[in-house]
Length: 412
Image 1 (cartoon, one colour):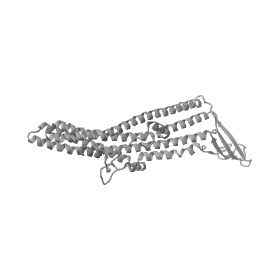
Image 2 (cartoon, helix red, strand yellow):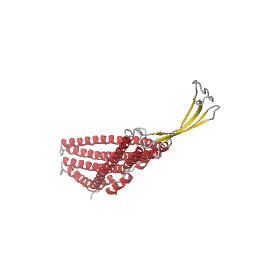
Image 3 (tube, one colour):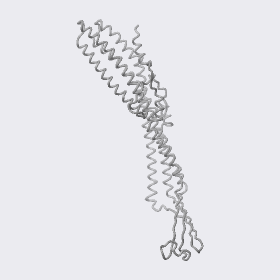
């Protein structure tokens, strides 16, 4: 029994020897250290953490310096002579109504927590983009290898067809058909080279490397398995998804804003204390409390409460919409991953070996004239397409897993 079909399977599954191979893990770690989107999101989060203390602090106090004179605008005119002439200072401190400062501080805390969730979103997005670009690069190398290997085999067929034509057993259209297919393979190699360079460029961009930096060939990957159930993904998404976490923080922040709007019905107040020198007369002291009354509440506070209630309802609807959208996308990618994994098994274990066996048996049959060249060529192209289909399904499977990890926050 011939071992050629088994060699085709081996070429699909076995890793190739190389001096240096590109691994996904170190690339992801480099992206976490160097990617400018992640670094910018980290700085936004760190900046947001500085806000709670500022928002919960008292307003800055006010110091007032001045004098009152009689009979002349000259400073200190008739100081000590007239009882209304004086020079002194006053210190004022505004106090928001109790509870307002804490609400503002808590809102800033929620803003910071939202930026933390946004940072997680950016990290997951960059990880997913690196992973997807890595798998596209891997697919480019694998597809080019398949095309070049089968190009060599097709050139062998052309030599056989030319030899048969030379002795009058073949026809010139057979040679032309084979040369046409050879040109088609060449165009596909050019297209895959373009896709490979695009994946390299995206990786260099994500890693903040100079454009055109050389990247080694990725390591050959196992097919992979999808072991997590869809229900488990849904459950863990509600707990771990950074996208839902961000929407939840927005809800919590808006709830606090609504409470603060209701607090604005209560007046803020200002305490003032002053000392005034009266010259030869006794010193004068002053203490005062000023209240900021919500005198136009029907135009300011009432609409503000209504506004925040509507924003809270909006935030809750946004959370529900994000959850529904995630559920749809998760199921879509989950089914895509399941389908691609099944097709990989079918191609790798059945379709490709059978197509390879058919091609192997048609080669001697063509040489003896039992099979025409068109049949041989069709068998050859079938093998090429099925091998490429196998790797395309592998690419689809890993891209779906990368998107699932990005949406759910779960490592697959």
